[in-house]
Length: 89
Image (cartoon, rainbow, N blue to C red; front, side, top):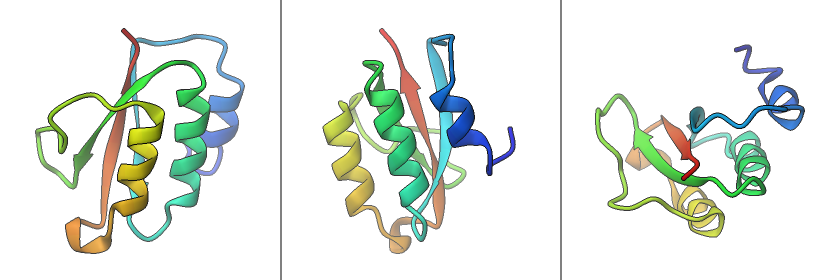
């Protein structure tokens, strides 16, 4: 999916897949926060994966508020980028 159109696509998303992820960056958090707001409004839970690790960076799924706080606190010293996975129970 083209990164430049990803936000527009997610805003118009008519389906609700159980799991989906998006990339976040330590230096450009704005687009990621917009994605979080859009997905959080649909009652998804979130877990980040930092860099190229094959494991989640948090022990539990987070609410929208918890994921927003986590992303706000995320800094480049932790890693340049990662993926935020969303999950619908």
